[in-house]
Length: 373
Image 1 (cartoon, rainbow, N blue to C red):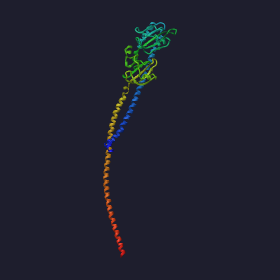
Image 2 (cartoon, rainbow, N blue to C red):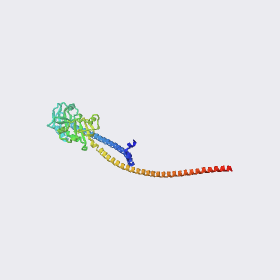
Image 3 (cartoon, helix red, strand yellow):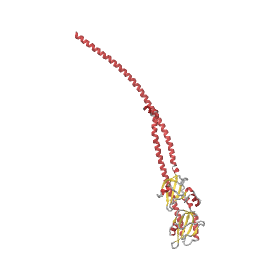
Image 4 (spheres, helix red, strand yellow):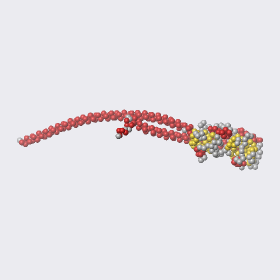
């Protein structure tokens, strides 16, 4: 029965069995080590990418906050030069200069406490102030503002500053409508082309993405998704629970990305800095491919070395077997000679024993003959 179940490798030559045994150990060990190294590399690259994304998001958030602070200071200066009772020609000129100077404001209005527009740097649009929380706050003597909202004439992004009269009471409200076109520069940290920065408001509505590029006007922004696209992903959920951090998630296009986030507290925004996972992990893929090639080369070299070693050992064993066979023949020959010698010695011993017996008989006869005499 056992001969019918003969193992297939029993028929292989010794060198190949030795080669197979060595490769059986080397291949899994090499693959395991390569996998561990690639996994560690992937984790390292992902960690570096998320840390970079978080740092970029923090930098962009700080830039927006600084810019908002500067625009607030612009309104504070203008409001300080007004008397809070009537808008003079110099006031109108100052407002126009501020709108034209840096392009940071689309328009600036002076609004009475009853909501009536006293002065406006433009004639084709005005801001609706009635019933808005920020206008009520400004009327009560406090600076106010609001995140962008879609209005009848475009997107309203408001900063409101109370104008005090000589008695120190609020006489008017200075309303500045910030330019949405400023976001293209504010959110662009000059990253590589495949990276993206996205701003989302407190309601998770898209404010701006650097993927939009420089958009011509509010209508184009609205058409591109501003204030009309709701952003829902793992990073938004994570940002609702932490001041800053990082995550792996899918962007609006469904692409797997790695990024970090931070908050713009003055606006209630969350800023995300992200890059496609395929770009982030490109070095890891390159390392993996390189590792596969190196492992393959290493295994081929190991196989060659193992084969040479097996052949060398096989030759030694064959030489040893030949020597053993020769020694066996010599031993058998010596044993045969020894056997023949033993037989010859036995015959001689038998003859000597017979001679002794005969001599003994002769002695006995001599003894009887002597006794008769």
